[in-house]
Image 1: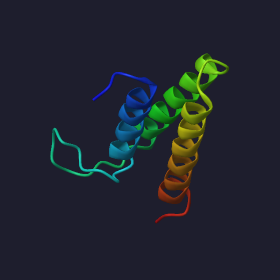
Image 2: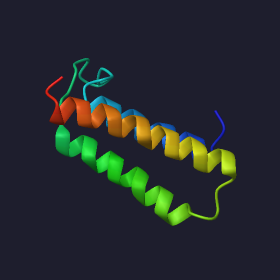
Image 3: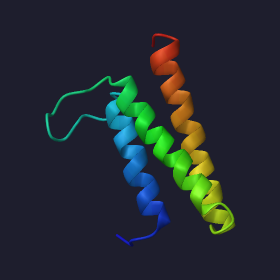
Length: 83
């Protein structure tokens, strides 16, 4: 795997999904449902976007925006619609 910005995005997104219970936690082999943990990784993605604004390629910026948008949908469905 290349050590690039997309790898960092995937790392943070995966952790968010683990905390939302969408991916089984590989350490405990169970599904979590941790709203605060999820929010922390979403905020880290926001910080990454803020700190790299203007320095990402158009493809990288679109990738980050797409991942963040999809995670928001999952987060809102999980914690605010009861599904």
